[in-house]
Length: 161
Image (cartoon, rainbow, N blue to C red):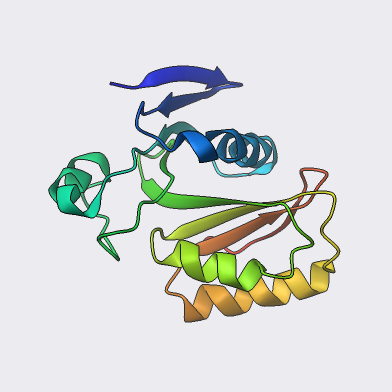
């Protein structure tokens, strides 16, 4: 069972067991991403938090071709593109100055194949630094991509391949 919201032309399905404490920031990040991305996204499924002892349930929630990375970790969502390709993502809403962005990327790479990061007005990292980090972390963290969105909802970099 999902709660269904519409955002523009996108259907957002929110599982009732999606983390309540992260839902607001996940939706902020997602909405900024949907406004800025060039990817053609059909639906977004916000995933439930599933305890490690119930890990067999994860296989029913995640796309069938996604290989779980760490049993105790939960990704935030998966995107279904217009061509029906599914991408497992983790959202990061950065409330500080961005100085710990590498830590956030490393954590997200344990759960998902694509990381979408939204910076707030306190971020003081240069675009050049963020681009360098994203390119480096995409290679070293076995990610299909990293997207970083600035405080004005513009994509600084999206390395998704």
